[in-house]
Image 1 (spheres, rainbow, N blue to C red):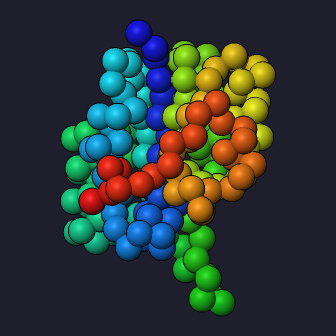
Image 2: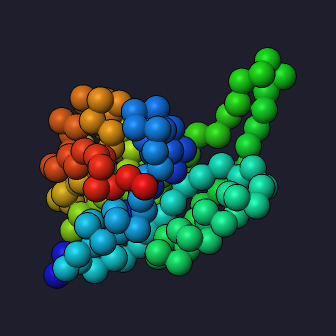
Length: 157
């Protein structure tokens, strides 16, 4: 049985699904599909903490599915822009988990993760799967993955 670790870039998935489909991503359907006949060693969901009740409810759902939630505070800059990026945290966790699994599963369309997937394959001989909205996922990330799964109707709410 393959051992897998899952890394969900919650903000990226939320905004790309909303932008492309005006729908939400179904973490439950994803979990069933991605973990079938596999052993989940770890599953992390990286999100921004805004402190509202709706978000806490969503986090509870993710925990019930099997995710460990990692939160960063929402930072509003004086110029009106916001900061809330988990790229470094995802990178560190994936490098740490790579020795323990056969496959890393990344939920994100962020092309910045291309180098990470290449490094995990080269250093640890670990396969990678990427789930993302096809039209909003960097081609470099798709090319770096051993398997790309387009988020479409069956993975949406």
